[in-house]
Image 1 (cartoon, rainbow, N blue to C red):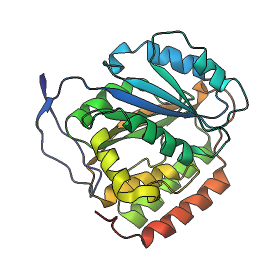
Image 2 (image 1 turned 60 degrees about the vertical axis):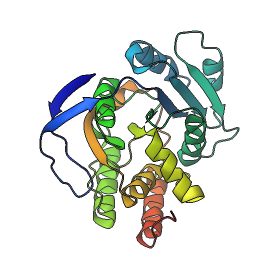
Image 3 (image 1 turned 30 degrees about the horizontal axis):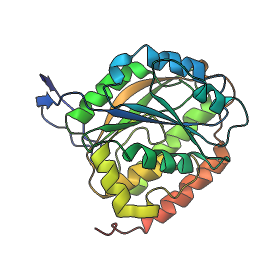
Length: 270
């Protein structure tokens, strides 16, 4: 075990904690849930990135690639993989959106992940810097139940920057969740907390089929008092191959729909 002193900022309420000693538990399994839709060009680089970081995969770890109805060789690249990564393919059959992919991926991840393990969600396009993941896992091991990637954007279009900023502002104002970045796939969930939240919300945990699902998940976890923290992560859009799968105008409409639903939502039944 290792003891480390550091100060963290709680997202909920923007409360700054005092520096204190953290005791990190021994390594526990990490289960990755990675939605992929037509990511044939990006998956080889993702696999290389993950292979170069074997410490991310303690015994019992898994990497679940959720193929969301891809029309290219995404599924084939996963099934044909013969390297050291503990890859698994979860096929959605047809394109249903990231919300449905996360619902299925979470269910598969929690089948075997112990409560003290971690569920890591990640983009398949390698735009997020995986060098930040050890710090995110340390925060989770020290008690954070959800660790968000707070983007430091590089080579990102103005339209994407504007959408991210607008989404964060609206969620902060409407829901009182002090998170800088609400739409990133890159997160670490404490498995026990995620399992408890899904049990409490049922089908209402993730209703949004599109990219607004990440803000919805964040809002639902904040409502039940999950301890949420952020870690700054570089986002480099130049690393991805191919166009973004996110329809900006449609996604903004989905954000407003999600916020309208959240504004009248009640506490989930215990």
